[in-house]
Length: 308
Image (cartoon, rainbow, N blue to C red; front, side):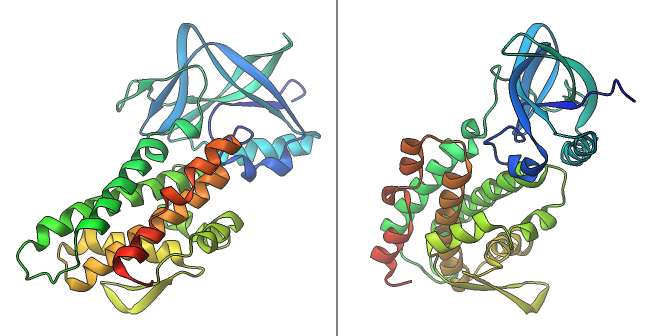
């Protein structure tokens, strides 16, 4: 139809500079800053959504393709990312910074009162995600204290669980940071296994692994011991996530798990810091602080555990 909107209003990870924008960048020919009046911004389980709010307004980007065919392709790509189980596509009126009013497709939260939605400011950014900020800093602090004060020990030694459980819980939280990142990049309802596999050929992820120079690990599926995965390498994220899955499913640990979890915390933490520093919309100064030498666990591990 001729009156079908050619623009899409985005307010989350699909905005220019945000984590998922590269998924659609080649289809976008124009970006205008805009807002949607009569709506408010909320966050639920880390994901932003908008819903009708009297007197509210939400800032975002108005994305336009150069051709009608390109507009269809862009819309289909965004529809796939903004899954229908979480969002409803609506035709809304957006207002640009220059005062123009434009019909645009926008994605409104489904079941806005369900779960535990929290009101947000008028503009969302992945930089503000609590897992990427305080969460990652907390993981670093706990892992640093552990490496400085605890020595690896066998599972039958007194004090093992007091020493092991804190780093086990810390590692599970670190894997949640990884899950949050892949959800923002590849879509929140995409199967977690598919999201992880997509990192294997992702240039930013490959570069982050190389920059982090993580300690080597080798891990097998506890249900299929013949299948082994290694880090560093193309399957590093699969290997680190396999450590998490084994811990969750098996419910037991041994001396090798102690060392394995330590090395996995160091490798995954430092790689995620490198990856997020590259991908988050940070200022240059904030990027240097985020992935500075004083925020890496590798040197601390080398100091207290010896060569990797």
